[in-house]
Length: 191
Length: 163
Image 1 (tube, helix red, strand yellow):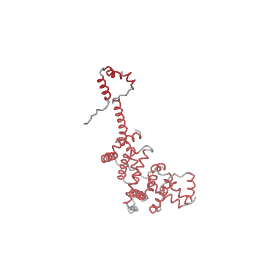
Image 2 (cartoon, each protein chain N blue to C red):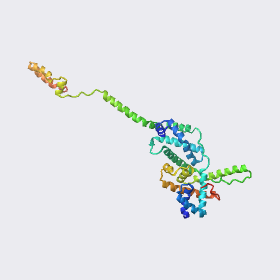
Image 3 (spheres, one colour):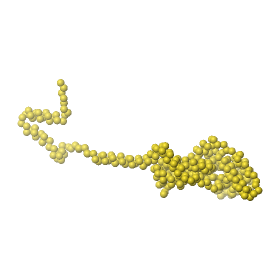
Image 4 (cartoon, each protein chain N blue to C red):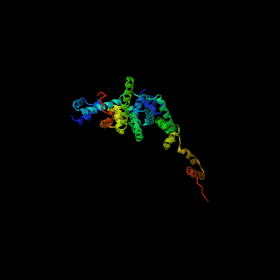
């Protein structure tokens, strides 16, 4: 069924129509939330809240933008609120990320190499969490989720220039904060 | 190109959103500036870690959990359900009210229209002289006077004279 029809029906209280909408956007909203919270349970919880919020806000949706954009905007704002609440009580600890000792056995080595990679990834996301919310938001949308500049402009309701400058500052800040953890490495990602 | 300008374009280069003409001059600069090259490699590494890895799947029965939350909130705030229905209910209610008013207007008897004297004479055969005939044909003068008095009083409200 066409999306507009589904939205109209959901707006009039049809749970069946809303179910179809949820199934269409469930993964995207979940992945968006997961990019920020890095926890399956928290992302699931956030995604549910986003859909409930969207359902009760449907009477205010007048097809001035695409439904998907409108929904992502709700998601981004909801995640922003959540992060604001969480950041007040969370302290980032990087002590757990220690160097993995060298092992002789190939299998063990491979396993440890993967663990070390996982830990390095965790460090990046932990450091990302320490960025100011407006930088974290734009960086996650672009560099983690791979949204286009136009999509970010629409979802965040800011000008392309703002997206560009925020993204530049966010990347600069992230790189600076990551410097102690990068050491001699670099260039692992082909550019 | 100087380092300051190069660093401005470094991230966009990693992001592959840098216009080709700038890419060329940036590459020229990176060819002889190890510091800027290191910066680009660093961010390349960071970006690789941000983007790589398999996508985590949502937990199963997602809709069931959303629906139970919806029902819970609808129970807690019944007016929200009414708001949803109001979009359809308002035009239907207006239509019903209009229909009801129309039916009343159509079924109620029309007020009797007052006719002019010639129209009444022609259409309803109301000859004012018919009532006056009795007066003219009365022979006794006192009866005639009484008839004139009562005819004049016919449309007036009854008077009660006090002591």
